Length: 358
Image (cartoon, rainbow, N blue to C red; front, side, top):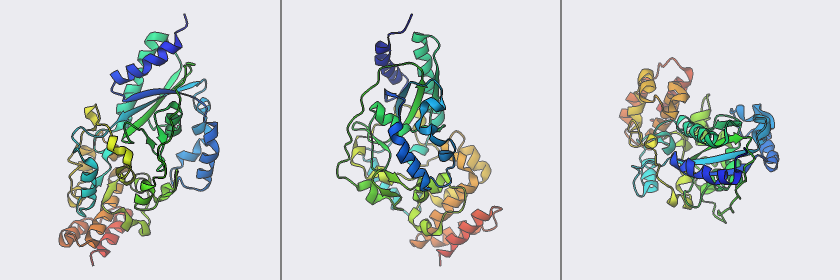
């Protein structure tokens, strides 16, 4: 007996909400119109060292090539702004950025690794669907495969691509994760929504490194999130002063976006702040040994960059704090403790930071 696909498509969003997903919608598996833009972005080298962006060719824009038989994509979003965030959380974040000695970690990374949290819920959603349909073809993804998640979410009607390239939603801003279930079920699809950025260019103006080189066009090689997370080599010297005290990721384009006044608090406790990462100081975090880094950040997305890049990032922030005249004596002491670090990259960034103290 064939399942009632229309009834199923209506039930899936409700099942998603029962699992903590903020919203679930369905898109066709056709991203043909995205291919030219993706290829141009790759040809311009704007993906930097993220070779995985190019290694799968156009599979990223062709779901049925990545997972043969795919007809539809069930796209979901999961809110991550912690319940404990202050009512005016954007102002609080700006205050931390203005404190040279504060270590600023992107909001999404202060709690548990979202990959595991979201993927587990997508898997449970697929299992719930199977209870109605019997076995069916599917694969769940959470930023772990060549998937154009923003484009798919846009096609599904979860929001529209903002000028900073993130997905925006009228009821939730952009403080959420995206995940997908590729499926061979020929479900009815949802309609996309109109874009609502208008003439606003606040995100472009706010980017510290001018990585948003034009509306809807990001040069990852200049993006602080790329520089502090994806880049495995030395951070270009000309960009180091622009990083300020951001040690893992960057939320600047989201902090200024008017739509984020509607950002929704997470319903899951997984994204509550761990290890005091919403109030930690640079010197404190720079003192973590590799063992302490691994132990404290177990289950955190930060752990994947490794202790070496962690120290690299914080050294840059310490140099910027010293250049701003903040606690130079304490910063020099902290940096000198790492001057003979086994990593040449760490030593280079420590030496650069010390040079900012003079």
